[in-house]
Image (cartoon, rainbow over all chains, first blue to last red; front, side):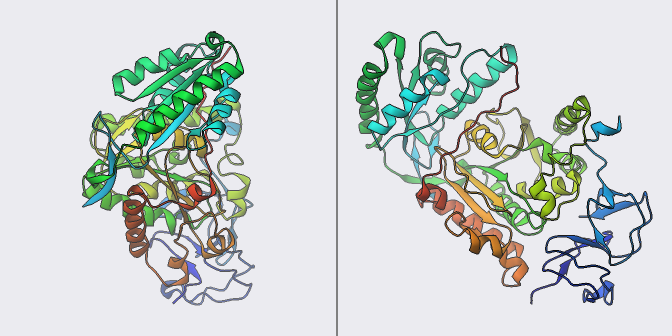
Length: 93
Length: 385
């Protein structure tokens, strides 16, 4: 059966949409069942599995992939508008 | 397990039997192309290097060219020079003497211009082709295979489907005694800890942190956020948010085995198993470095789709999603998107890739070969006068 989204490890706080997910749609992945999407999530993009505070790490593959720049609500689109990379930041020296 | 390969006089094994026309300097590029066009069974490459390189850059280009020309996928090579260049056919020939590669050399100033060089070049290439025609495939253990891995035009599915599936194929090859090259150092930034945990020893671990720090320092020197270059605009559109995220997905393609050695760009490993090659993420540059490092077959995963091939090595293309597989069917060999569709698993696609590697190594042509893709580029350190 085709999945709607993938969560890679239990530590992850984001999931990846496997197809275009629509606002209001509810996730069927067991531990996160019932999570409603607050926005449309394009295929291949991520959404939050729980509320994330500004400055909190974004976890995917069980590893840190970046840091939230603002509060991200459960079900919200997670991408460059609310996450910054921590590596290769020559602009922050 | 065996594949059918060409055993060379120097003991190395090729998966192809090419005769290559190689200009050692840009000034000889057009003549090299004209020679190859006159003898269509040969292959030719073009590049902008060969003169003005200083110090380490010169060594680096010489190592890249001589390593590439020594590929066991090449039965013989015609080196074409101008005469007054820094990197001469003779200089490369000395390296090929050490590796035991068959070559001929020719120089435009010595021959007396374009037409005379083409006339003589044609004779030399025909001679090399005649010799190459005597080579026959024989059963060879797959432990003699060196597979180059590459990912380009990545999307978020690269790290979820095609890369872990390729990683499974790599694990199987390493278990069988073969060798896998993992390169693209910028796409290890943010995933060093994952690689370092699997380092065979402290030297390897130290080198993993060193090469990524060196690469990251480029962004520091430039005073820029690496995001925008890495991940690229296309990667970001595909859903990749940060370099760390891209890297963690990218390194999966090398598999999960112990990292035995870290080598320089275009350097031949002295160990078997999983090897890291330091180098940039530029796809064509990576392929050249891995072929120079001994790779006889390259497996290339792509989410956004790319037509890229390589001049003397077959490139197997693996799509990360079914949409791009269907959309660019003339370019892509295997569809790892079936994993998302629920029709396959990472392991089953990995097994399919492994089988394809054996078949392609034995002579099955890839889509990139059918279309005649032979993109070529050498890594430049930018130290040229």
